[in-house]
Image (cartoon, rainbow, N blue to C red; front, side, top):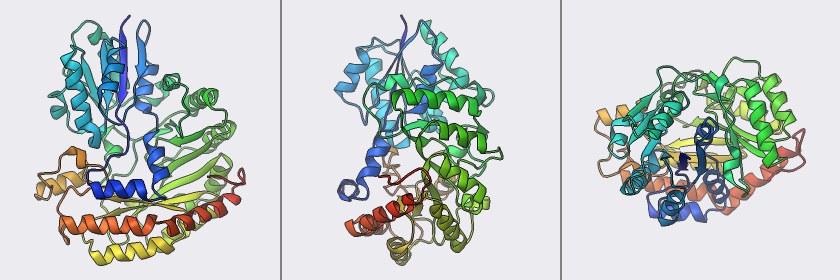
Length: 438
């Protein structure tokens, strides 16, 4: 029988040794790293869900390429291997594709990086999927079966999410995942300069609640009380009535995390339904205390207004992770010190710090490339969100690296991490469905 092996290259990646050591040592960072590394690759599981008989499927997630991964994939005697990778892991994807091709196994690569750089990806594999994979997947399988793969597959129109199949969660095996994933929408109505996901896969679309109910039921078979991450760019950014979605999530008995923008804190009717449906934590992008990235639209506002919204969200029992980008134009040593002072005292239940990263396909990448500011010696494995890949306008590269590391040490040391943990406990005591949550 024909077989497709799905290989998502996952895991926490950092180029600079000092930053990697910090990430593994800081008590406030270790749980986040584990949760990110364990997330299922929903895109590949979805393609597996629309792979018809007589095809069979296997799933092999790995943090990198080694002999064990290669042996596990080859043991399936695959007709084709479908590899998914982000920019930071794309070199691993190319390495794996090369090794498989040495064994005469055809490979296909998809994902955000392949969509942004299809010509590059085509040099390393037999076929590339650009954009949504669902509309072209049957063509890929048909061509693979007859040994006539085309170099590139690209849908002529955005995929209708009402046709989304049930992901093959059963391929994950028996090991419990820290979080399961579902997607309620694809894309984002905003166009933040630094964001790749919002535009590369097509326009903003919402998945019908009926589809989501089937996915939630399938997850409940695996875990009756699951922790779920919504794989959305900006949940509730659309115009649909959120109440049916809330009801479906409430019935699933799940706790869930998602990404939103701060404006939900100005919608009391939304906050009440959000907490009652099982949401325990949201991430919002404040991004910078002094720089408004282009394209943020209505998400851009005064810090005071944003913090008022954060307080409203947390008063409803939902913990807020504040996301900040370090290294935007105008960043200085003094501005990083001010950010550190703000974050060690601010009311966020948790924080996320990343370095501005110009992912291919974004307006930020084009701007920095066109002005000669991309670092020639930093390849894709440096595009981790924690490594510098461009020349800052006010600092040297090394000054930004050292300032970011100092900021991480300040914000994720034992004292600040314990303070935020206690704050999360206090917030969750107000949650209508929780007494405590860790």
